[in-house]
Length: 56
Image (cartoon, rainbow, N blue to C red):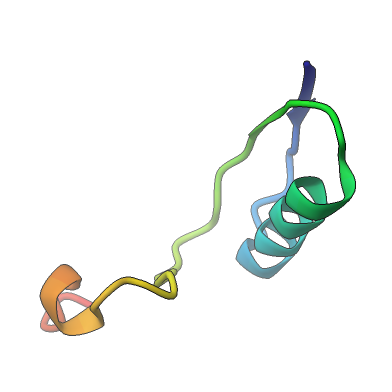
């Protein structure tokens, strides 16, 4: 298993790197990172149901 510690806090970079790790690596990969404040909504998530829109 490959373990990657990513010190970047840029959400766009981190999501792109995650995609590369999922598609390009044949090994098992564990990647640790954190993002600066951001709202990230997945394809199968409902923003109205999952976000506190008044806060965001």
